[in-house]
Amino acid sequence: NMNGLSFIKQKQSSWAQRQGFELVSGTIGADGEKTYLQNVADNLFEPLTQDSADSYNAGDGGETKDTANRLAKMKAVHSSSAIVVNLFQYWKGKDISPLMYALNLRRKPQPDTVTENAGTDAPDISEISPKENAAKIYFEKKFRISDDSVSFRKPANLDVVIEEPLCHTAIESKYTEPYGNSHEGLREAYIRNESLWTELPNLYDLAKQISPDNKLFKHLDAAQLVKHILGLSANYREKRVKFRLLYLWYDVLGEEGAEHRREIEQFASIAQKDNILFRHITYQEVIATLAKDYREGNEAYIDYLTERYL
Image (tube, rainbow, N blue to C red):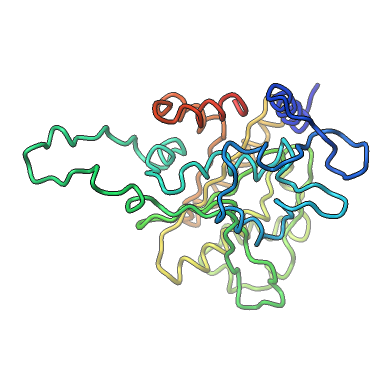
């Protein structure tokens, strides 16, 4: 019975072999499991743009650079950052309505009504450059949790943030992490600092249950999600910006996938009681929706995602 982690690794290794890529061990000079590619670019639909590369290089994850004994994490065929880049980077500088619809965060965009309005004073939509109406998409964006930098050294680090005028969407992406790993609890410093929780009584109750150890969730990294909400709340409430947190995950068949989904729903109901806009969706649903409704004009991108991840 194959578990979620080995299922994903096997699926991605098969993809790499179909592309003719050589798989190597992630530990340099060791003869370990061969699930890495020799170049980051081989693992991506489009090479990293300069601003994407800068975001990852500023992070603390060793994502894009090899260390003395390990290959860069983004070279792993089952890399979590690679799936993020492959889905989101394509939309930088484009109209993101299709993406937001696929993420189930927006109603379906209507086809352009430009021709029907010919002869009226409606502006010609084609004259508006897509750059002007494009949202800003950031990778690895950091949010300070508290001014107490001694107890809270590390900021919350969000995989993707999509900034639009009315609402900012922060995305926590999960690929292999829910399967086959255990997740740490919340440090007691968080529980002791009551000022963090004034508007989050239900999440505070949950936080106490997963501090210092998390015995409550097997697949969901609840402590990380709580920290994300604290960081987002601290930053966006000051600026009076509406935000939502989207949990985007890769689903697997069998009990692990079902259990993970139950845990997500349990967390969602707690966050919603504190008026946090918390949503969740699978990579498979997002890619299937894009493929069904938006393949035209995006063929290479859609075919890459479906062939690799569906």
